[in-house]
Image 1 (cartoon, rainbow, N blue to C red):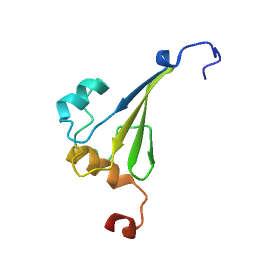
Image 2: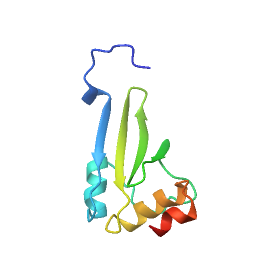
Image 3: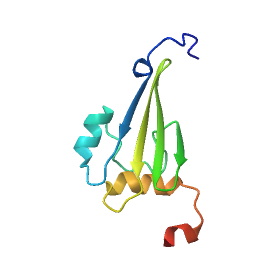
Image 4: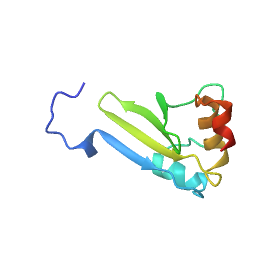
Length: 98
């Protein structure tokens, strides 16, 4: 737990926003390691949140540094990354029809 509230956010958190059409290499360079591979059996993130049109992936990199990756639920988003997110999203079947 960060007890020093004076630390700048950039010193404890990296935020990456994936854009539709970003190739895997661009995503991997921004994140620092590959995340666009089939992780259906065991995703690499610590926790996941489905915001409807965006997915939020949280990675704990060290005891005092983490990363949030925002992935758009968009047809042009990297297929494998989007598939991994949709695979764990808790959505009703009706939600997928829109």
